[in-house]
Amino acid sequence: MTQRIVLASNNQGKVREIGQLLADRDMEVLPQSAFDIPEIEETGLSFVENAILKARNAAVLSGLPAIADDSGLEVDALKGAPGIYSARFAGPDATDTDNNRRMLAELEDVPDEQRTARFQCLMVYMRHGEDPVPIICQGTWEGRILRTPQGENGFGYDPLFFVPEKNCSAAELPAEVKNAMSHRGKALQCLLQALSHG
Image (tube, rainbow, N blue to C red):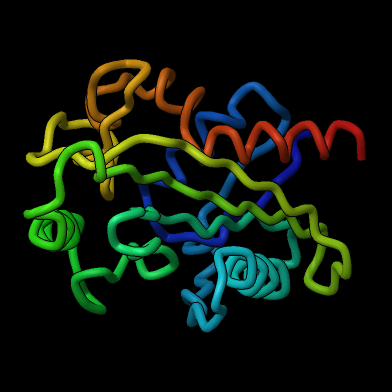
C-alpha cells in the first residue's frame, strides 16, 4: 500500500525533486497546497528549527506524516550569508533572479578562489503532529559562486553554483545527476535509510 506523505512546501521545484527521489518507493508525496495548508512563518534561527516548524505544521493540519526541509546557500566571503534567508536574500518577495542579482553584486570584488560556498539541507520527517523524536538528516554540497549565471535547469541559486567535480553549474546538470549529488539528495538518502531501519 502506498504511503501518503505531505511535503511541507509549496515550492514546485522542491516538490518535483523530492517526488523524483521517492518515485521508486511506495510513497506518494503530496504538496501541502493539496490540503490548503498555509505556509508557516519561518521564525527559527537555524535550518533545523525552521524544518521542524514546517513539518509539525503540515503533519498537524493534514493528519499525515510530513517531510520538511529547510535549505539554503552559505557563502564563505559573506560570513555564511544568505543562510536561512536564502529565499528572501533580496527582500521578502524576491524572485530567484532578484536573489542571484544581489549575490553577484555582493561578491563583485571577491576573487574566484575566495568565492567558496555550500548548499545546506536539513530534512525532517515527522510521523504525526505530536512526534517528539522527528528524524533529522543533513546534506551538504560544496562548490563556489560563478560570476555569471549558467544553465537552464534547477532553481534558486543553481545557475550561480559551480560544481567542481562536473566542471559546470548546478543548473547545467541533468536532474538525475543533480539529485544524486545535491544537498537535498544526500539528506533524503539519509532519511530513506533511517526510515528503512525504522
